[in-house]
Image 1 (spheres, rainbow, N blue to C red):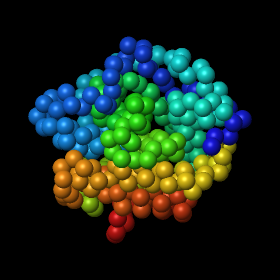
Image 2 (image 1 turned 60 degrees about the vertical axis):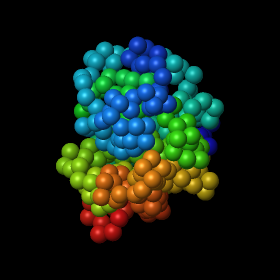
Image 3 (image 1 turned 120 degrees about the vertical axis):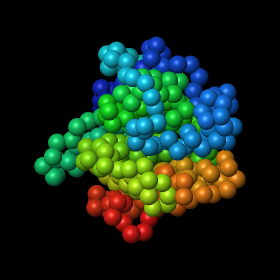
Image 4 (image 1 turned 45 degrees about the horizontal axis):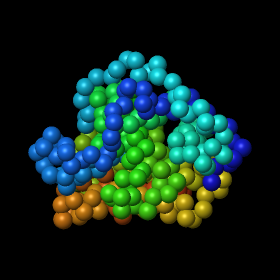
Length: 297
């Protein structure tokens, strides 16, 4: 899947697992937190978590950033040197995806005579301090526009399968990472700061998330050209599409609440998320991802 000879740049991923900035446990401990979050049961907690999943994440975490976090080194990533390591180890795979995604966007910006500003991915376990406040694994992967970093607890990928019914697979992980970097692109272009939190199947919140899905598909179209990945197979694209559908608002609501209420959607339905990832992947151009002006989502 990864080009085994491709050199990995570990500096783009910061590993704070086990450094004292992450807690123990992870996403699986939802049952004991139900009363803490709005007093709901586990179904409500999971619904809240998935509404936060792969969002901009700006207002969903509170607290302050620990200034020492920036000084932590990615010591446990020393085994991540080449694409061969990415094919063998999950944390190295994240490094490979981040390297590929940022190479693509750097080249894309250069074509428009713009300079891309890289964003690090922070791997943590349990909880961590961010520019957007203290965050736990329960919020899922997210992008923080304050410090312009992506935050990811690797335990999420197991939960994506066991709790949300996705088939999983390496490229499902690539889709999640690419979606978060889609928010970084929105941040750099000013779209993230101007987007409101209007809910509903055609609201600005959904349009923001669908554009990030489209950007993920756009990267997938060009992933092999970055030099980090081999040409993608149809099965790998199917993994991404399956993951996108699994985190659709309608799927989550049906699973957790037993009913679907489109007026409360914040991320889009399974069909919408699949549609916009596919649009980016098939058309391979940023112009395919203008969800904010699309008449039909």
